[in-house]
Image (cartoon, rainbow, N blue to C red; front, side, top):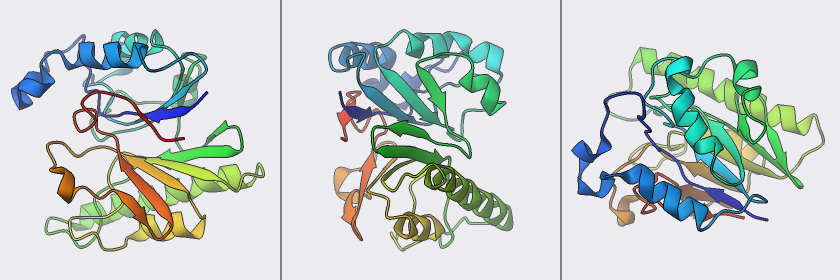
Length: 228
C-alpha cells in the first residue's frame, strides 16, 4: 500500500492529438504508461494525477480516456490541468467511478494524510504575467486554501498537495502558493505541466521543509514514481 504519482497523460482516444509530434519519446506513450502502471501499481495503491488528463473538449468525449484510466489498478486522485476543458461539475465527476476522485475545493484522505490541491496558474514575476493572469492566480490561491481548509475541518494536520502548474516561476522566488503551503506545513507537493525540462533546471527537492516533485509523465519516462 503506497502513494505514487504521474501526470500529463494527454490522452486522445477520441480526438486527433498525437503526442509524438512533440518528439519520438511520446510515440505510443499511452502504451508505456499502461505497461509501467500495471507492473508497478497494485489495487491497494493510490496514484495522484496532477492534470492534463485528456485532450477532449467535452465530458462525453473524455469518457473513453477516463475509462482507460479506470481500468488500471489502484485508486486515482486528480486535479485539473490547463488542457482539461472537459472537466465540468465536480459532483458529477466524483460520481463517475468508485476508484477515481477529483479535487476542486475539496480533499480526499490517505490514512493520516489529506490529499489536497488545485490546478494552480503561472505566478507573478514572469515576463508574460498579465492582469488576466492575476485574476486567475488569485482565484487558484483561494481554491488551494479551500481545499486545505476542508481537510483541517475534518481534523487533518498532515498534507500532500497536488498542483498542475509549478508553484513558482523561472527564477524560483516564493509565491502565494508557496506561502500557503508553508502556512499549512504541507509535507509534499507534486506538480506537472512542464515538458522537456533538463533535470538540472527542474524545481524539485526540499525547500523550506517542503518536498517538491515534478511528475510529468515524459520526465518520469512514463513510470509512476513512489512518493509515500
